[in-house]
Each structure stands twice: as structure tokens, then as C-alpha cells.
Image (tube, rainbow, N blue to C red; front, side):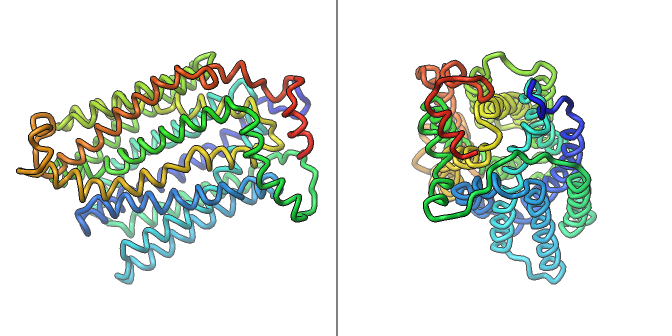
Amino acid sequence: MEPNQPTSLRKFLILWSGQVASVLGTEMTNFAITLWAWELTGQATPLALIFFFTRTPKVIAASFAGVLVDRWNRKQLMMIGDGMAGISTVVLLSLLLTDQLAIWHLYVAGAVNGLFGYFQDLAYSTSMSQIVPKQHYARATAMDSYLTYSGSAILAPAIAGILYPLIKLPGILLIDLVTFLIAVGTVWFTTIPQPKVEAKPFSREQLWEEFTFGFRYIFRHPSLLAILLFLLNSNLLTNAAWAIQPVMILARSQDNATALASVQAAIGIGGVVGGVLLSVWGGPKRRIHGLLLGQTFGELSSVFLGLSNSLPLWMGTGFLAAIFSPFIGSSNQAIWLSKVDPAVQGKVFASRYLIAQLAAPLGLAIAGPLADKVFEPAMQPGGFLTPLFSGIFGTGNGAGMALQFTLFSILGVLVGVGGYAFRTLRDVETLVPDYDIKTSDPTRSLVGKER
């Protein structure tokens, strides 16, 4: 075991507890904003655009954030990310209390939170190998990425659904601020090791080398690139479907907020069950199976969610879809944490995010207009798609979105199954050595040069 390798999960658990509180507050706010925006507009496009403006700055930031994360103090970056989230919440609350809040304000807030949140997430994820023992990578990822978010998806809609009629959006935003302070406190009082990196001056040549290092590293490892191309396609299809899922449920349930909260809670329970299973089990020995099979079965469950038109079926299929979600992210993260040297994970992980998420904003951008301009009109009585699909989805409000959701989910299933056809992707764990195993691989000199 290396001298500086962590031996316990203590620091991780402290940080994780703060993140649980923060994400709970954020998810309560997201649920309340969904209700507020749907009441205001009655369309899918504004809600999809909130996701778009939140996600796009992350993709842009990925082109340069890795260099900064590898050079700057990661704890301070996490604090800055939390701080900006708190400031944006205060601004939204002020606008709301003065009756000036508009939809476009949510786009701006989403962009700010997306940009600084990405720095926070990257600083946090690249610190994992410094605070989590190697054998617990998949377990810690499942806890952080899935138990946290899925647990919040259970509690947040239920709490926000009860409180929203009483305290409305201002009260929910105040709760979000309290949970933000808890998260900041856990980061403030936790020591986060910083990997030793030789600080070089930012000459023009050095700057270019730093910015392009992650891409050069990935392209020298075709199997790692194959994972990202797989995720590129997956993210496009998933975002084009799930961006309209909340409004699809609202439209199909006659604007029943309780129904939406119940479905979101069922999805959260599924994520928790999947996360607990993965945390206890540790995941498949070959992580690539968790990635490919998680994609396949998760999207297959989404197909049945789109085909459903009753609350029990929405809850059941949403639960099943969410069970498989932790297997995708945690298996993917475990592969990268074991293959990439911690000293360069910031640059590599940022480039990884940029490539994998490049198509996600496109999926989010097309989701709303496709629903409002194409699928919804086409599935109204007399619409041009009703002769083909009305027997399956019915007609009227929400039928077009259900068709759209189902079609993109079917394509997602094909992506998951198709991944097994490519050896470069299927055998990534044997084709790319772990970073702490000595090898004659010529790309190792690339890592050494940048340390």
C-alpha cells in the first residue's frame, strides 16, 4: 500500500453528510420551481431550458477547469462552488419577494450554479482517490452519487409537496439556504489532501500543453475514449427523454402535483435500493458490465414508463429504471479512478466530462421544442401520428411527450446492447492498466511529464 493512501472512509463520510443535506435542499427547490414554472407557462420548453442552461456551462467549463483544479486548492474550489450556489439562491429569493422573478432569471441562476457547481464537483471527484481507499471506490461513488441524490429524490418531493401550499417557493428557498450552510460547514472543518504537483509557470506553450493534456491522454487510450463515445450517445438520448419526464407526468395526471411527487419519490427509492445494493455488494468484478447492463436495463425500464398511463405503473417502472442508474455512474467512475493517476485526474476528468457530455445540451435543447411543436400536436385528436400510436398512448395532453419519451428510451436500449459489440469498450479493464501498476505503456511518460 502506498504511504499516503487513505485507510478509512471517515473524511469521506463527513463530506458526504454535508452533501446529503445540501442536495436535499436543492432538490426541494427544483421540485418547487417545477411546479411554479408549470403553473406560469404550462409548457415543456421552459423547464427543459432550465436544464439546458444549467448543463451547458458545465460542458464549456470542462475545456479549462481541469488545469485549474490540478493547480488550485481543491478544498477552496469546493467552498467557492458552495458559496456561489448560496448567493444565487439569495438573489432568486429577493426577486421572488419583490414580485420580479421571471423564467429567464431561472436560466441565469441555472447557468451560474452549473458553472461553479462543475468546479465544485470536479474538485470533489478528483479528491476521492485521496480520501477513499481504492477498494471502496465503487462503494463511495454509489453512496455519494446515488444514495445522496436518490435519497433526496424520495424525501424532497414529499417534503416540498407538503410545504409548498403552506410556504410557497420563498419558504422552500429559505430551507435550501440552511442546508447550504450545513454543506459549507462540513467542507470547512475537513482536511482534504492535495496531490503534489510541480507548479510550472503558465507560458504559452505550457498553457497549451496543460489544456490539451487530458484530451491527449484519453486519445492515447482508445478504450477510455470508447467509454466516452458510449456515454456521448447515451447522454444525448437520456436527456432528450428525461428532460420532459416531470411535465409528462403533470400533463398525463391533469396537473396533479401529488402524482408527480409520488413518481419522483418512487424513482428516488429505486436509486436508493440500487445504491445500497451496490454499496453492500461493491459491484461486479468487471466494472464494464455494470456500465453496459445498467444502461440496457435502465433504458428498458424507461420504455415501460413511457408506455404507462397510471400512477402505480409510473411509480413501478420509475423505480425499476432508477435501480440500474447507480451501476452506470459508479462503475464508470471506478474504472477512471483506478486507471488515471490522481495527480492528473483534474485535467483528464475535465476532458472526459467535456467529451461525454458534449451532446447532452443538444438533448436538452431539443427536448422541449420537440414536445411542444412536434409530438404533442401530432398526438392531439386528428394529429398525424394518432393513426399509428393512439392505440398505445391515447390522445390529448401528454400523449405526445409519452411517445417521445418512449422512442428515445428504445434508442437508449440499443446503445447499451450495442456496447458489447466493440472489444475496445468491452475489454477496457484489461486493455488499460491501473495507474499504480508499473507498465511499459509509452503513455506513462506523458503522465510523468505533467506531474
